[in-house]
Image (cartoon, rainbow, N blue to C red):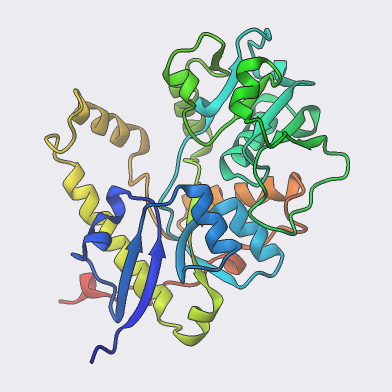
Length: 330
């Protein structure tokens, strides 16, 4: 009879999760069932609203708001999804929008206001380009991940009709711009009605990283509070396994034959030159602390949380003690 506990991890189907999904990495003491078929908004809703999974990849912004509202979730400092966001601000090309400040007074759509991608972009627009988030009219499409989500009383925020989408409204000119977590289909299909707010987004993102040291964290790994209470060793063991799975992925992906992409190796080397260290690093390192503290600050400034939560309130400790672990055993 197995003495391992059974947990379900809901996450994206990422290379850094492959070893856990395939079972070549197994967290000590845990039989981990990994489910990956859901899109991100569905997974976040089912974890935060439905409490369906013991462990889940979840929106960092929504998790912070959940903790601020006393929801029974904790997190470990594992960040399976990061993404620069300049390239995800889309405009209607007929509205004369040439610079970020042209968004002032405009109608801007987001999937939902708590969305991490939109939160990062609103903060970046305000702090890096002088575009206050309250200077725009906001339109949302989905319910918020947190039922208690409350926003500033002077925020101009509306819900789009159920029969419409923010992408369709952008195409039709009902919205001037949208901040979206994904590359929208009209852009992929080269629809002339849409374009990017930052046409040279890669250069802008590299400059942003050089200035701030931030590669924006989108998602964290959340754990039900009940699991933490009953099995206090689970967060550390999960953290170790997730790190091991990521290390296996990075070793595999360093081989230029893995991906059918021309100049793949050159892109890998460019990434190493820009970042100088692992861009996907886990843990509360100095760089990750700055990243997360910036996001918490944006959440507070934009009225998504009532107070600035400390990282110690948001993340469980995963240290095994200084210089402890197999790598230090001789």
